Image 1 (tube, each protein chain N blue to C red):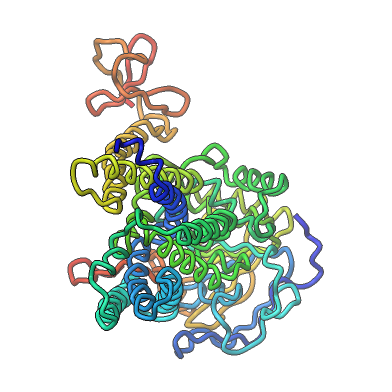
Image 2: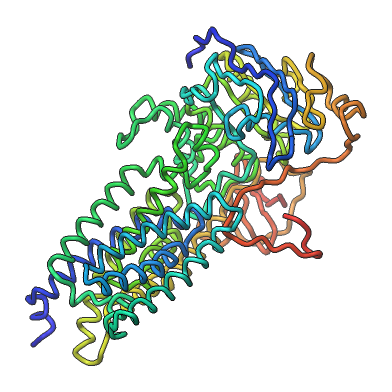
Length: 268
Length: 333
């Protein structure tokens, strides 16, 4: 993994995002130096996931300037340096896919069209599976794994590209403690290699010891930026509604399956 | 004329060639459609292509090419409605379904074509296929195969997780349209074999069958292609054989044979999944306390009880209990 970056991985100045005309993020200034482990925290709806999606170009900025590794996002093409781990749910589809295949799709940034996998590609895929502890499940169908294991498959998929900058969106949501600990071990290995990590989390749990810096979002703005906080401090009234329970953020994916909503079934 | 003499006729040889190419190409695209949970997209495009065929009949040009053209336009429109609009994919499909079919029937009526002529395209007429049509079928099927297999890593990634694909720098919009265009082309290719109304079956049913038995995308794709070819050729030969006794159309025979394959495979798949679930190892958590159990017979490889790995030893599932050997007796785990 190359750790040759001399430029700052993330520089966002006065960033703003609007979804459907409604301002969601305002006045975001964020600079993440190389090798830092940043925890992006905050209540549901505070805009932390939206911020991550804006940082990787999935949500266009309505205002502000964003540079990744010193290149403005509009001209940024070095996607191999970016690793993205979405919230769980993207692991399965309508056709069975093996763990190895899903992880191999993370290697696409290094592959050219109509070319088979090189030996380097295969080595990177095997190593990524090794890091998340799923090497023995490589040929199993992704759909047969547990939720925590599927989350680790998505992490391995991002790892396979050997990126310098990692974004993880709520990797610990709905994952039991044992799996959170193995996730922490994987991320610690990444951190040792000098990767820059941006982690969206509701609660840090076993990951707390890895965090160098915490940013707390509140109502679309940065409410706190500084030394790591304990889990309960994030939920202080100054940062939003007091929270004593845990939610899973919902997915807003378009699907051709009609969503049936009825008073008895509740939301999706 | 005997059954075997039938294969000496050029029309039968042309039909066999067309069936083989269509049977391989249709599931290759169908796999990506099923992966995106858009199994009915082929049907939607098929309905749109009816307008294309009618347009060809009306203007006196080759219905195959007008079908390709209109189907491609229709597929791109479906994709645009699906990705841009806030309409669900199935609503987009439904809109085009009705428009395409109604337009086709209206146009062919205007042109004064008999319904029999349109029916050739609706339900297939592989035995009347011309040499030129066979060449077009083979060429288009080859294009579909080269793109569908050559770009499979990219197409797989885009269909699996669009957002991740975008972050890896893939042009997601381009690949979405590419799949739609490939689907449109294979619909037009399969039109002569099974007909526009049954096209989707050849794209989807082999995939549904193969995924009963497979765990990986690659084997699903390849098995579906083999099954598709087997159903097409098998259905054609079967209908030829049966046509000595009754009027049997090749198109429906191909589809029904394909469905029969699914009907046979499904119980096997269900059994395999059940077995895999039964034999999945128990979590390697040591039991809370030592609890010996009364047990008469000796568990072993042939005792008929399911043996499941549990950490460093094996538990035998017996009447809802988990028995683990411990010295001379069994423990409850």
